[in-house]
Length: 133
Image (cartoon, rainbow, N blue to C red; front, side, top):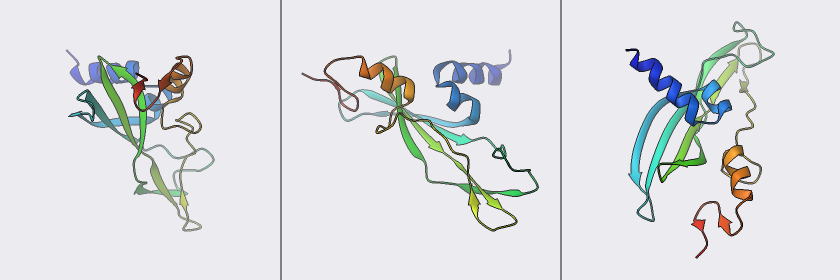
């Protein structure tokens, strides 16, 4: 049984395709949320792939930017928080930092594009706090 491949496949099935394709899952934790709902926190690091328009000899890996947080579809009544760290590169010829441009969240939100589109279709829904009562 190939356990690692099974986890990778599951990761690819439950997360937005852009995230699953370009980021590695490095940790998962579960915590109590503010309203007694469990929350799953997934920590993701950008894969070590040189940005388009550069050769690997032009750039050196230079750590990560601070993690950004994205909310995604709940899983089994647990809120999902994706903590995404984008990779920073050093341009060897200029000494400047370079990174890929990512378009992972819906404009004006901290939600994945798919989750924000879903929430727009629900009247009375406040994305960060659930349904109005």
